Amino acid sequence: MERKDRPFDVIGQLAALRRYARSLVRNSDEAEDLVHDALVRAFEKRKSFRSGGNLRTWLLSILHNAHIDRLRQNRSLTRRHDEAAVEAEQSLPAGQEHAVRLQQVRDAFFDLPEEQREALHLVAIEDLSYQEAAQALGIPVGTLMSRISRARAHLREFEEKTPRVSHLRIIGGNGNESS
Image (cartoon, rainbow, N blue to C red; front, side, top):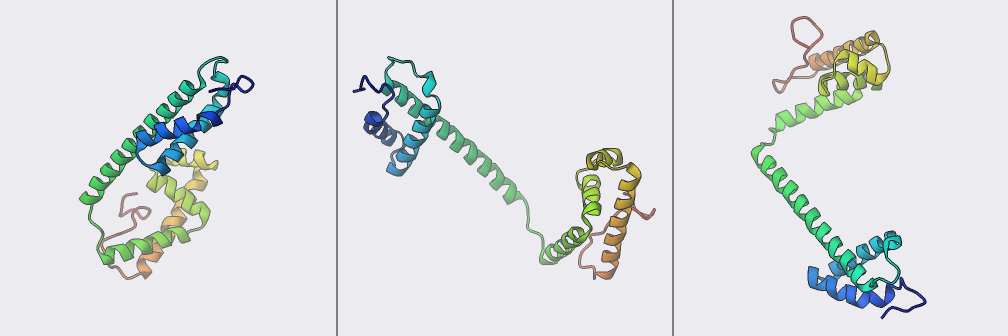
C-alpha cells in the first residue's frame, strides 16, 4: 500500500518489483540489476508520475519496458557478434612473415613525425584529397604536399634498408609508381 504522506514511496514496492523481475529473467542477480535499472528510470521520470496514480502499476510498467529494452539490446549485440564471427571465419590470418612485415611497416609509420603521419594518414588511409586533408589540418595545400613527400621518402628509405620478406611496397612519390 502507498502511504498518503509519501506518494512516491518505491520502497514499499520493492518486493513486487523483485518478484516480477525474477519471473521475467529467471536469475536473481539479473533480476536485481533489472530492478535497479527500473528504479533509476523511475527516479529520472518521477515528474511524469501522476499524483494519485497507481505507483505499483507505473513501476511495473517501467520494469517491463526496461526488460524489453535489455532483450532488444542483447539481440542486437548477439546479431553483431554473429556477423563478426562470420566475417572472422571468412578471413585468414596472415602468415608469420607477412605479420612480421606488417608490424615493421606499422612501426615505421608510427615513427614518422606527427605532422607527417597525420598528413599521410588522411590522404593514404582516409582517402581525402589534398585539398580536403589540408583543410582538415588547417594548413596550406603546399605544406601538406611537402609533409606527405617527406613521409613517403622516409618510408621508402625504411623499405630500402629493411630486408624484404613479403611483396609489400610503399607506393607513390617517385614517378614510376602511382600515388
